[in-house]
Length: 69
Image (cartoon, rainbow, N blue to C red):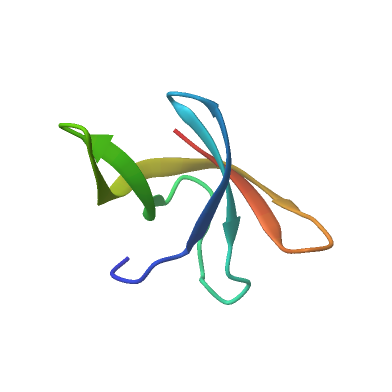
């Protein structure tokens, strides 16, 4: 996918991120996605993309939740 699918809501561990995705993103289970985030590299804050695979999707009142590893 070339477009952003959502944003990181919570980091469960270095390998598990909880993400809120756009309703019309077309993301399915086992798709690979990237989520933009801010991180520190050499003591400087930079934009990075976190690449992961969707392991589950859960509908919630605010949006969809998914686990990315």
